[in-house]
Amino acid sequence: MSGTASLWEAVSVAAASLRSNKLRSFLTLLGIILATTTLIAVMSVIHGMDVYIAETVSDMGVDGFRVDRFPVSGQFDPKKFVEMLRKNPELSPEEFEFVRAGASLVSAMGMQASRRASVACGSEQMDDVVLSGVSPNIAVITNTRTELGRFLADSDDRRRLPVTFIGNDIKEKCFPSTDPIGKTVRVDGRPFEVIGVARAMGSVFGQSRDAFAMIPIQTYFKMFGSRRGIRYAAKAIGPEYLYQAQDEVRMLMRAWRRLRPGQEDNFGIFSSDTLVERWNQLTGAIAATAIGVVSVFMVVGGVVIMNIMMAVVTERTHEIGIRKSVGARQRDIMNQFLVESAMLAAAGGLIGVLLAWVVSLLVRHLTPVPSTIPAYSVVLGVGLSAGVGLFFGMYPARTAARMDPIVALRYEK
Image (cartoon, rainbow, N blue to C red; front, side, top):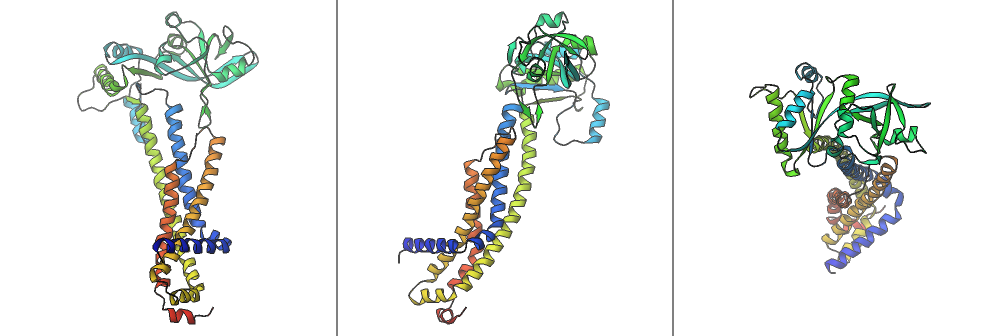
């Protein structure tokens, strides 16, 4: 008997065995199914979140960065935060002008300050709206897109005009069926003329990104003062100059604050890469936890498969004796049980893939995360399942292959 014919015979025998014991096979595979489902579901969600973070969370682009009072740290440390509250001074308009004048690798630099406010129009009112005072060039720096009207202009800022550029949520709440341009809304009780509406951006983790109103930064300072909550946004002259531009701004900030060599920065500079790096740290921790859970499920599933295969070997002892008596080699017997064990585990892997696909569909339809199953995760999940079946099926297969045919023929159930 050729090797190929023997393999196909082992496959057909294994398939027949799986079909004849459907319930037992399914119960045997629960561990493998859970492991594969967990592995692929986590990989698909992380993959979707990577895309989501890259496309929607960061509005800085590949050449933008921000300067803030506090650095973006991977893990929140209350003690360090209290210390930074004490030693990190607020950013100021004077510091902004100094840095902007000295930065040669920055194509645009703007200033922004934010707080929570209420926006009212007629009998309608929206609370907890993000009110931002911004430089007129913020739209270019942060890739803010206009749906209706226009963005804030230099003349609006210079003259401290009461004009506002609103998000889509405010437009839908206050002017659902009318043109909002030229209409008046009340921001914290003060009248502002609507000059533009931003293109809808959707939500992040269930939080709307369209509940905001922007006003000229000088108007904001006139209303609330210029000593709290300021941050800077900048755009390098090109993506390849991003890190050099950040270093240049850092040097200017340290010079303004008279920080000595060796002293730690008392401000933070971050870009899209920083956010992606922090996200990768988080997903790395999630993936490590998932691998631990998957490993436990795989081992449990493998042990169950080994026990079931030992029972199968016992059930087929007489059959093994007959096959050996008509010329079947140890390798043929071993291949039969190894193939059956691997097929059993691979079937569990395939069921796990289907369940993970259902999970991915639910995540995609119930959340804004574009969850998709990467092809490599399917190959990894099914391949790992089959590998577990082969490994844990080795002992039962060797036990069957080494049986004495005379003893096996005398065996009675």
